[in-house]
Amino acid sequence: MAGHSHWANIAHKKGRIDAKRGKLFGKLSRAIIVAAQTGGGDPAMNLTLRYAIDKARKASMPNDNIDRAVKKGCGESGGDQYESLVYEGYGPEGVAILCEALTENRNRTGGEVRNLFEKNGGNLGNSGCVAYMFQRKGLFAIAPGNTTEEQIFDLALDNGADDVKEIDGGFQITCAFEDFDQLNSALEGAGIETEIAEVTQIADTEVELNEEAARKVMRLIDALEDNDDVQNVIGNFTIPDEVQEVLNAEG
Picture 1: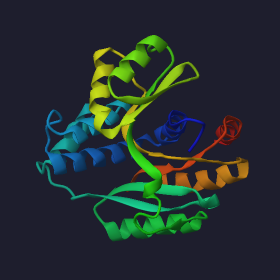
Picture 2 (picture 1 turned 180 degrees about the vertical axis):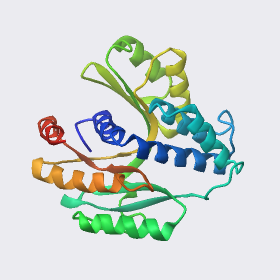
Picture 3 (picture 1 turned 30 degrees about the vertical axis):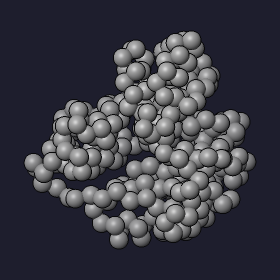
């Protein structure tokens, strides 16, 4: 998506979402609720819950909100039952889009997502139409100054990383989904703070977008991410740095 790295993409998206912090907290709460519903309320025994809580803390979500979401997921304070859904489709320029959602009403959410695709130059497809283009992997981003090249390369490769890249003084690391917890624990044990530490979908190949195409695709991405039920939107595209600078200037 945005930029030549998944880190640049996620960091840019994080900046847009952070501007809507109230909505962000709602999405994070929902992820915690679903994780607790499906795996129990103990983060030590439920890794999905642990990851959801870690993500919420990185976004500065108050502990009271986190605790309340865990209790809802465990049925201690009532609330809706959510389910996890993945919508697949194509955006402008034929870009493949995965849209991950958590909803208590799949009919409502499905209709809204379809409408957003159609209004923004895309179309919703059938299950499996683009999922094969992506792999589920662990993704880490470390800001400049938090570690050295020698330290991070040795630690990452010794703990399951399949790729380590230096980007603008920081580092981006990917690993197989199965190795996420080991690598995450190793980074925490070494006191290396991560800007991003999550399991996500990463495209096998990406289409580079020009300025006009990038505007169209990002209009669809923004519309989908503004939906309360949508948790994450991933596309198989990259935006060159010079184009990204133009988009950032436009807000």
